[in-house]
Length: 206
Image 1: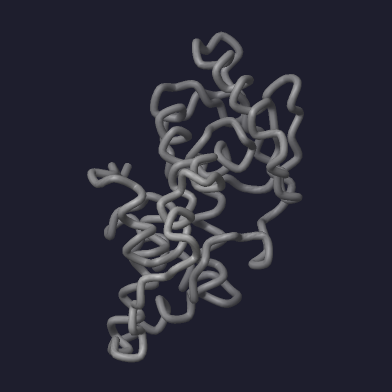
Image 2 (image 1 turned 180 degrees about the vertical axis):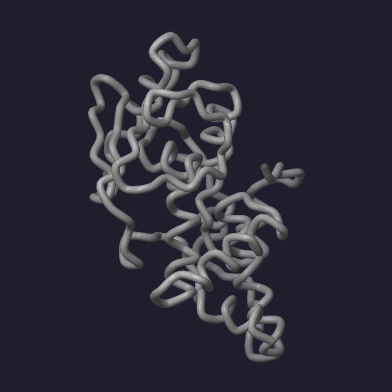
């Protein structure tokens, strides 16, 4: 599991984009990018080499999902062996990570908090406890908050506070019981990471 060692807002300022790493704060006026009154830091992308642009996109995706280089490379190798567009398949694999699903179900304020829930053993997959945030869920998998978990009340409170955030259509939640089912793979249009994944494919194809 990748551990963030720097303030999350620093990453957003680096890329001059909201990566939504701190939950609701990113959508509020407290976001440092909002405080700049719409003024953007000039990143002069025209002066960055093609390799630099590719590296920038790769790092953006890694930070967005909270994965390290070796883990990210493994996802890419898996995506390359599957049918379809490699870049899209890579994002589908990352989007189906267990910690990201917990976040998308509004059971956690951020992906970092979602990883903590998984590692703490508060999440079950197909009624079995699974403490691996990087587990890639498959269609038909049932995700639930462990009934006797100490974090269950906290999850319910977070879910209530985030009820204005819609759960993606590829997940079928039962909010009352804190249970959800993965009904299909997400489409590229349903994946919100702000990136050009083809640049990452080009980077690893060098």
